[in-house]
Length: 181
Image (cartoon, rainbow, N blue to C red; front, top):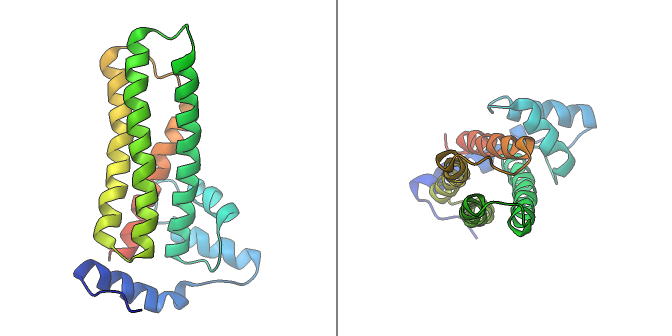
């Protein structure tokens, strides 16, 4: 079944039709080189490579790399949601922090849903939707941060986890930009 040819879809179709020139299925060194090339467009190339290589399925191309990066982001977001739930159940958590955590739980849930929708957008070749939901995930992360900043409370999540989510969100957007050319 041929993809529809809306403006956003035609860019994706053009790219995926030519993706064999970006596709590497050879040895590990060749795959690493190909992933590094794709990740070179991202804000954090090292994190990109480290998060894509262990989860990459199939040929190395920007579409598969993006799917792998989104899968990593989904996994990290799930960990953050679990940490939020644990903090909410902690009796030492202040009521102000609990209110902020509730906001974050809803927001991270929304980001998680946006990432799942991004995976569907890739499968259906809907580049407008892909861009929209990835942007939404970035906004969602910022909303949680803002809730805590405005309350004067400290976000009771591992700082590295939060920073990694922000970096993964930006990396996903950067890789998707290659598909939107």
